[in-house]
Length: 135
Image (tube, rainbow, N blue to C red):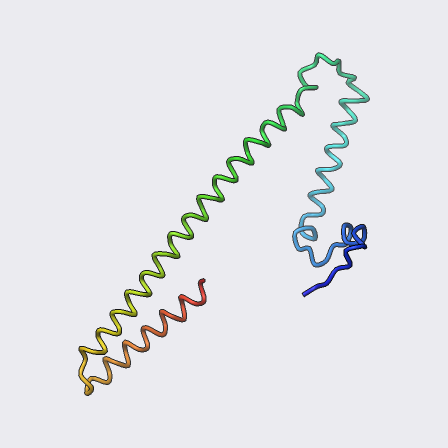
């Protein structure tokens, strides 16, 4: 666990520690920044657009689209979490039912049926190991 000095917020802000995403995408971010600067230069310095131009209203369009996309993203995230939770409940129910089945079979099976008992124990342990590794 890393401990940070809360008073050194400026150093923490510009420190990049093992950021895989930034290391892999730095050149793409640089290309996008240069492209954006070039377009901004063309709009402000070369084309000298008037205040009535349609292009001047693009920031409003971008903010509205950003809001709509954020809502879609939130709904998709909530749906995915609901599906995961439903699957976890069903998997837990399957584990409980298989445990009950194993208990009932252990009562039904005779003592001389060792192979069947060992098979049931092994299969139950494999299922339990898989359940604990996925949750």
